[in-house]
Amino acid sequence: MQTTLSQRGGAYQGRQVALLTKHGKKRVIASVLDAVLGCRVELVEGYDTDLLGTFTRDIPRHGAQLKAAQIKARLGMNLAGLPIGIASEGSFGADPFTGMFSWNVEMIVWIDDTLGIEVVGVASGATSYSHLLTANWDEVETFARTSGFPEHGLVVRPQHENDPRIRKGIADWETLRESFRWACGEAGNGSAFLETDVRAHMNPSRMEMIGQAAQDLARKLCTLCPSCDAPGFQMAERVPGLPCEDCGTPTPEARADIQRCVRCGHQVTVERPEKVASASRCDYCNP
Image 1 (spheres, rainbow, N blue to C red):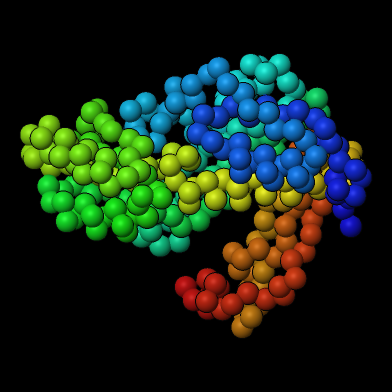
Image 2: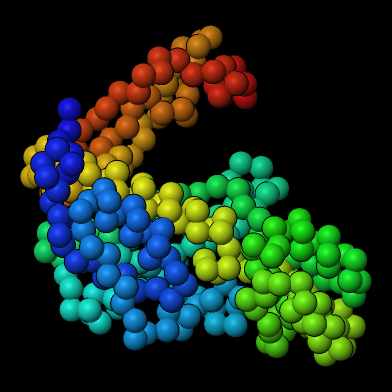
């Protein structure tokens, strides 16, 4: 059985952790990490994280999701003068199963320069991330209610999705109606483009997903390497080959997980409890 931080009194007990954010993420991240790890997540200000990219596309994000989170974490650490920093970054796209629904992936990176480790918490799930081009207020009302408005904010542009003229952070019906009229009046096609505001402070669903990513991060940091005692001993690879229940042929389904230390590289292969895979997952029985 692996040792956990809670069993050892907490390797991060009382440690300050820099968090650079401008969209209220500290509330959900600190409530998890402070309670589980005993650390003190400190809000870092003095840098506009929107300069690294925005979901409203007025500033494009440079680099992949994890890279953006790493940059933010390092900026926060440098501004605060702390050896430990965290940052979160989200992404939105089609779900990985059917490609038919909107999907949100949240990552929180933890960088500890004292131990020389980096651990990433991840959470993902279906979400509301939609858009509408219309000149009809009744359609706007229907779209807004379907999107969870006004609890979930909206963004309005004239004409099309990439128009640089933009009003965001819309969270009440009066402002939405006025913004809709403004956009239609500004647009050459007489239409307004509306979309879900997925910035964390305007989107409770996304904020909940960030909290789940914080819980995943906490679980990983609470698992110590059996060799070097560093936090972050975690599942790194899946080993395919679970045999088919009908013919016994190895399938792409995982038969074991490889857990690996982010510091020393020590790894352990853990067999999964499942003994066979469904024939529906077998390339021989179900080509």
